[in-house]
Amino acid sequence: MPREHTAVPPADFRSYYGRQILKTPVWNWTIAAYLFTGGLSAGSALLGAGADLTGRPGLRRVNRLGSMVAILVSLVLLVADLGRPERFHHMLRVAKPSSPMSVGTWILGAYGPFAVLAGIAELVPKRWRRTLIGRLIGGAARPAGVAAAAVAPAVASYTAVLLSQTAVPAWNDSHRHLPFMFTGSAAAAGAGLGLLLAPVDQTAPARRMAVAGVTMEVGAARLLEHRLGVTREAFMTGRPRHLMRASEILTVGGAVGAVVSGRRRWAVAASGVALLAGSALQRFGVFEAGVASTKDPKYVVVPQRERIAQRQTSSAHG
Image 1 (cartoon, rainbow, N blue to C red):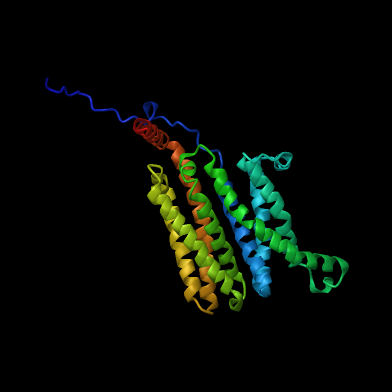
Image 2 (image 1 turned 60 degrees about the vertical axis):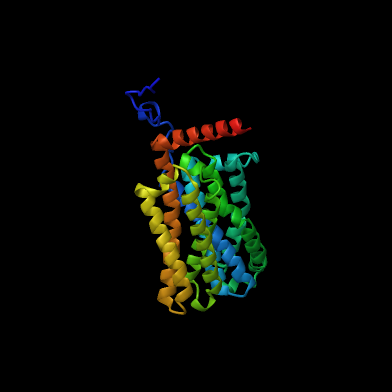
């Protein structure tokens, strides 16, 4: 018998009448800024501890102060998003390892005091350093800086875990790549601050850190683009695409500038500005991609259909 041909083509199901499936996050720009300032603080703490241990007081001072200011701003942005300051305190009442928010709260609780103490030590006037309080703060500065640096990688990456545990398709599907992107970006931001404000003759560690951070960040971004399915379109279209591309241009340019700028103050400072701007734009790009992925139902339906098909194929072969 001849094969019958249907008059209606097969349906390309996306959602019920193309309506949005997921609710768009109610977060605003403060969360994207919070992601950036937390990473900046973590990267600065790492570089500040390294500068302290290798005898670079100018670089140490810049990054310790930067780490302190950035984490305080980060906490203000977080509390602003929570609505009431006591909510942050309430999250410290319990420790829930299965909750990224709970773990992140404890990470910040462990990191913040060390970063602030190390920063305060840089603000003690010289005439006070021989007093009892001055000696106590000065003696605690190095241990506090090293402790902050030990927790810094968790501070740099936990926000990526927090985002990837949501139902937002672009963030959830990127759970293998976002921690590396955020950690690399944090290192680049900390290096950028050192390059911008520290004495030029003490910036060698910042230059090396910039190259390492940008390599990790850009490498993870490339893997994200090649390994994600349809959700990669959320990163590669519209406003997120412009932000991510600008971020990559600035970070790569900043790393190259850090290597070739030599002792020219203006060139070193420009490289630092580029690294800082690139890190900030990366966070805003990831944030915007997540928001965009909740508005188009295909980012929910298509991956679900692909996973169902894979399970059916595996069951058939099994």
